[in-house]
Image 1 (tube, one colour):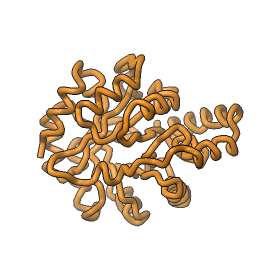
Image 2 (cartoon, rainbow, N blue to C red):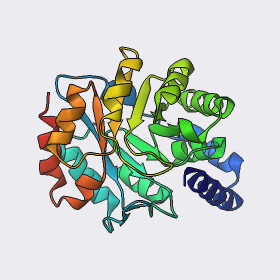
Image 3 (cartoon, helix red, strand yellow):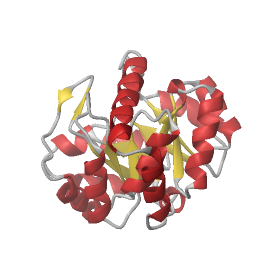
Length: 258
């Protein structure tokens, strides 16, 4: 499944590159207003922080929410106290786009994450050109050389890499890379099964001072409390917010957890 998602994302990037060549995207990226300091926005505080996600669909659950106005949803997220907003830009299985990212960036003044299957420099430059402050790198999808090169490019563009892991070896690779923001995704991207306790098992391997993000398996306050007790600085929440009916109230409940 993960290999197919990465291949599809690369095919879509190649199509976009035909319409907008690399040199043009690079110029746009370099001319963009400087990225916000996402690491500062996400580092540990007295209460847990939340990355709220603009998410229309997923391969495991299918359609979740229409989200006809991602900018309006982003403003609700900011009102509820989100520390950053994740925008799924993958087109085929998640129904997202770079246009969603651009709309969200224009609507809020908090950091914005491009969440996609990033595997080549063109996608990183696209992210910065669209206004992203963070870019997701999935360790399971990348060999060490590619992971290191993309991580370095994100930093060179003054963005923050969110390095996502799923097991102990991937955490080791992220730590060896020098990642300052490490996520642990409870969803196995090969099987799409969830393991809410995975974060707690892996968190002790993530060095102090690194931003620790728990991703997936959040359906309510109890899950956020569970992750906070396990050492999470941040939770990334998508489905519960787009399907829950009142994202502002939900975020305020989550943000109150210390």
